[in-house]
Image (tube, rainbow over all chains, first blue to last red; front, side, top):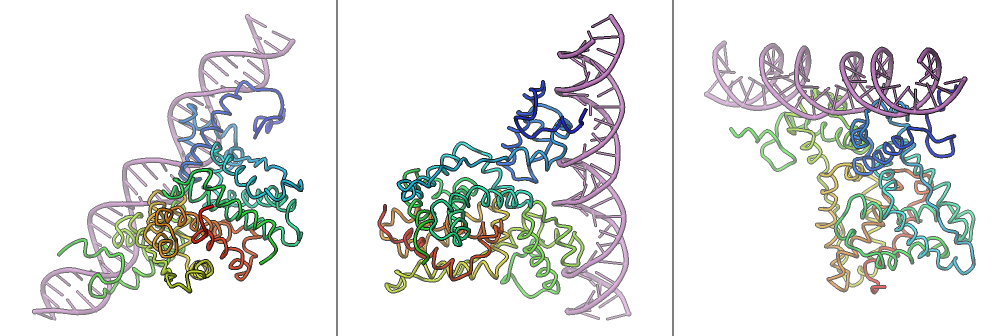
Length: 199
Length: 199
DNA sequence: GATGTTGGCCAACGCTCGTTGACGACGATA
DNA sequence: TATCGTCGTCAACGAGCGTTGGCCAACATC
């Protein structure tokens, strides 16, 4: 009936289709290419070849390249709750560890960062994540509600900066840092940005 | 005589030429486009149009797109000396203020960051800047020589993270921070990354 | 077994890109 | 004034891009 039924961006949109495997292969290939090459150089043709299907299938399932990107980088950071009195003073460490977990096994984040830098839609997606996911966390632990956006932005600057130097630019000294070092250095920074009195 | 004489990447390569104005216009337009659009979307044609000349002139003067990029993003951070005993304890503030100065009036840095994220040559250029310019500064103030690379990388992560969120992604809360706030929040972070005992 | 729907491939479109080479106009030098 | 290197334009090339539409085979439904 509805023509747009055949365009889906995720689960929960009806019965399983025979093409679900192909759709998944396309999404997986797209994430990999977007992460490795950025928006412009990740071509539909290359993604289709990775997924072993014809480029026209990508258009059928995701309408156009923008739709494919939107479907490929749907992200839930699954940020932990840090509102408890005991966890509040550990928020920095908890958040840094969580971010490292997310980045290490999730190429979607690399894709999003790479694309966000050169693509308006990608940048807006990242702004949305800051607003909808990072800001609420800051609100949990930050004393003054008025300072929440600024503190969330500071936290984002340090966490994204680490991701940038380590996972995207791959600067050797940043790559060589081991997990424990990163946590030990960054956790106090994040903790201070979130809870320390305004300097 | 030498054909490659006509391809120059900067001053000091001989007598002034009649085409110096054009060369400069091309470089200025290239910087603007690379900063605004990244490597792929900054087309030679668009740059040439901005400079009011024919695209083929760009090729004649800079050989190809890669050569143009290399010429456009030659960067000297002009990092201040922080080796004096009195300045050493102020290194964080001095460096943060210097970085803000550099970023605010210098679109070359935005260009380099935008391109570094999606282009291998750009990424290598940034690695070179970390190695040749940031690392020596860390060496001036860092107690243990063995820790210099790690500490420089931490400093880079915070400074580039700020540039990323504020000047490239333009996340609203990061844009709204005023200069004094940024210095007050980031200076202690940088100072700690450089001089605090290993945690 | 006929019919309609879905999954997939193929060939082509219009467009833009980086790049090339031929050619004319200008200005310095002799 | 004649010559020659420099500056600039114009038209075109081959390639790759996103995207489209037609076609065929496999499946589901009756």
